[in-house]
Image (cartoon, rainbow, N blue to C red):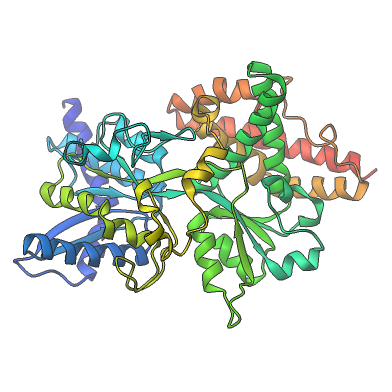
Length: 493
């Protein structure tokens, strides 16, 4: 039997199994009439965003083209689940000799997720680049290709950022008063012993946004070392180690690692944790939801100054899109005044959302005009100014992003109980120095040093031998558990 035939026997059923929940979702919804056009979108966006953009686009399309269009949202989960669906779907299509997997658009997620899909050749070039070149031209373009080290659209013009995202800290006002500490303003504030057992975190292996936050913290530490010593291999390695220890102290203070980042602001708002880290619109939405009659909220969100880049949530048209022309119209709509206004204009205002404030930031620089700022829910943020205060260096950690997620799993999640016990004993002993706080194992394997993360850990993961990667992660986990027990024993003497 030929190789492609064998692959088809495996991949086509796999594609059906993966796609089944998506197909079932369609059956549960009200089916459109025979004269209604369809648009198939796979997305991690929540139901509020789906409803706002689905209804607004249907209205816009009717007004501009005189036809009804039905947006069918495919929501298998977060970006990790979407990647699995796309991988299986495109593999099954290729094995069956088809182009595409029956979905038109990928809408929402991070630039990292989109760059991975683009590298697989799964996107089409977007016509908006030819139709509206003025958006991307000039010394200060309406939509820059790069800003603060972040990429806002693909090199091949096959994906494009729609709205802006940053990361920050959520904290409970009453909880901060109970601990007797100042409200956190920097990532490093969350390493204070006062926060022991009071921080909510999510698993970076399951949440891309949380993994990005940990990368931001490490990049901040690396930038500090480079500023002090100049940029060289030693300063980058030292900054990486200090950043990992900074992240690890925060992890040692945490109550748990949730499966999803949406749980963090919820638990902080409820008082189940004093502080946590999340993407900006989660924090701002919960802050608004928890406002009392006096206009004050028991939950606050703050963006650490100089501690986060401003990245994008993109959109892309998938290869073989069954509704190509409608997909192009959807992309065009996203960059209109209406499409951009939905993200942050006040609910009920002209071009604003109908059902709820979305608390996200438009990507178009020219949207931040006085008449719009007066009606924006987050006018004070001014993301293009914030972006100038932090430069993301993809050449420092970009190739180590996946290794970082694995390292965090071994260093702080699989060994979380031992980590907390060691940190608690160190707090009791009053020895919180870097020297007392956990060697990273640079003296030999297993090691999570800067060199190891970009070398043996990365190469093992790129080899796509799942057993080898699992074995490496297990060895790292065993190393850290043993090391934390030693620290706890020494500190308790």
